[in-house]
Every structure is written in C-alpha cells, then in structure tokens.
Image 1: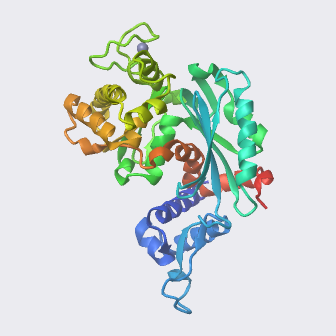
Image 2 (image 1 turned 120 degrees about the horizontal axis):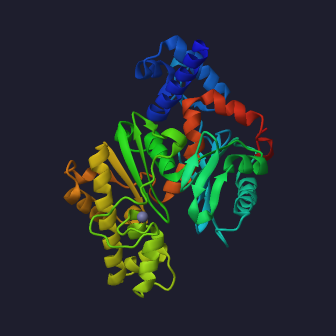
Image 3 (image 1 turned 120 degrees about the vertical axis):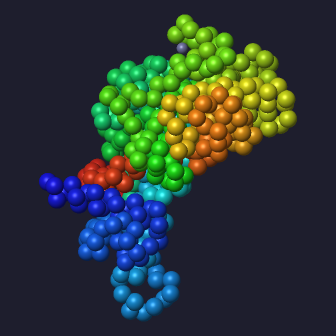
Length: 403
Ligand SMILES: [Zn+2]
C-alpha cells in the first residue's frame, strides 16, 4: 500500500510539474520535481498511456535525439485531449462549460432557471447539461466527468448539498442525482472553494502559498487555502461569511441583526437597492454594471458603495489569515479594474496587517471564473491522483464520445 501511495504521489508530482513548466522534456522533469529519472520515466509512460500527457514534435527537429529530449505537455490537443465538464449552479441561472487540462474554457452556455425553487430543478439542469454535452463533446475528445460548484454548505466527500437556502435544498445527494442522470462521474463542491482550487492550480503562483477567496454573488461565501490545499474543516462547513459584520453598514439581515455582509453586499441586496433607487427596472447586477458602463453616475456610485463594503469585509479576513493573496470574485471588480481598486482602497484603509493593495486580486480567469472553477472541482482530484479519476471514467463515460 505504501508503494501505491508513493506511485500516486509521483504521478501527481509529474503531472503538476508539466502543468507548471510544460512543454518540458522528460530529462528536464526530474530536476524540477526531485524524482529520479527512472521514476519520471515510469510515470510519464503511464500518463501518456492514460492520455493526460502527449509528446510534441522536437522543436530542433533533430533526428535520433532520443526520447529523453522529446518535449511533453498536458494533452490539450483538439484530437484526444481530455475535457472536463463544469456545472455552476447559481440562483437565477446555471452555467455549463467544457474545460481542458490547462483550465481553458472551450465552450460555455447559460441555462436560466424559470423557478429556482422548482423541486425538480436538479433534474432540469441534468437534462439540459446532457444536451449541451452531446452537442459539444464529439468522439475526438474523452470526457472525464463533471465538476459541479454551487453556493451554500456543500460536502464534497459525501457529494451532498447540506444546505442551500436560496434553492430550498437540504441534504440533497446532488452528485448521485447528476451522476445517475448523466452516466458520468460527478464531483461537487462549494463555489468559493472551487474558485480557490482553480487559483491554486491555474492562477497566481503565490496562491499556492496561501490564499483567501471572498465570493460575492447572490450568496456570499469564502474559502482559504494553504500550501496548495483548500481547507474543508469538519463536515466541510468552512467558509460561511454571510453574517460577517461590515463596519458602518446598517443593512437589515434576515438573521435579525444589522450590517451582515450578505445583507449589505450580496448581489440580491445590491439588485434590490438598484431598483429602489430607480436605476434599473429589474434587480439585476449585470444590468446595473451595464448602466454604470453606459455612464449612469447613480449606477457607478452604488457599485462603488458596494465595493467599499466588500473591501471592509475583506479587511477582516486579511487580518485573520494574512494570506499571500486575497482573491475577490465580485462582478464589477472582475469586469472593471476601477471597482477592484475601490475594494483594495477600502480594505487597506481598514486592515491592520495589509498595506499592499496589490495582494488583493480578481480571479485570473476573469469573466470565465465560474465556468473554469466548476470544472476544476473535477480536475483538482485528477491532479492529485491521475490514475484514480481516469479509472473511474473508463467505466462510466461511454455515452459522450469516449471510444
Ligand atoms: Zn445576518
């Protein structure tokens, strides 16, 4: 068993070294990951056979230069390169995506929810996701499975949604439901942790040392990671910051108190306030962002007010964790650097430990943050145990183009 564990760790180490440095020759992998050339050779053979790596043409075109010099890279080729499906379940809509091994979003589609509290919402989502996959996954690329990300309290180990008040879900076995409907392996996680995982795998190098991620959507969540691992905690309950106090806010929260982050700064609260002020006809943050971009000063002012609330909450998290980077996913800040700067300024003004605004960043994937992060829920276990997931999908993914 110890040998098996070492084999898993070695395969993961080689795969991540190629993720970070590829294309890279076999002979170059050994000094980068600290494994012996023989161990690297054994693992690259297995990863090539599993279709996760591929050999690229030797750039120097040297005949007979030998296998050790042939560059290897993750298999992202249009023929044979594996893909992961992503499913982000929001409140007003879900988003489907297809993502390659480098986290590149190859296709995406929104699926608006007619009624977010429909008891069969997960069945409707699964049916529509199945149509999306049949359309986009052709026989030429293996589909590894589905990563699903959503707000609320999610247990990845059990595949369940413990609690998601906005959808009315409690103890929902989401992974099993989706897996049965689609005939594919499905992994689930909270979306704040999913974004943190995507930053660690594909984003800012400092995110692997330590990061805090603050997610501002219709729900408000947080996640933190250290030494390349996102913290779950007992029952995977970490990350509920909905009732974190925002200094200076008087917004009334459903919990009965005032000034909770969710009441002050969620998309739901922001949309309602935008309607109340007569800026937009519907409580939609994208509409509000569009209005600001079109030059409406009231929209711009409201977005800056929210950004400062987010920044003040970020300051509390910065002081508690002192992370190498703080990632903030918030629509206006993702789309426009000016609102991110507003978040940075408010955070640095309030924080007792952080005087460097550059530590606060938007997610590296920009507007593709959620499509990428959802698929990362599946890709992250792949990069930890490359053989585990490919074995799992060999037995289940016949219907979507795997030969
Ligand atoms: Zn509250």
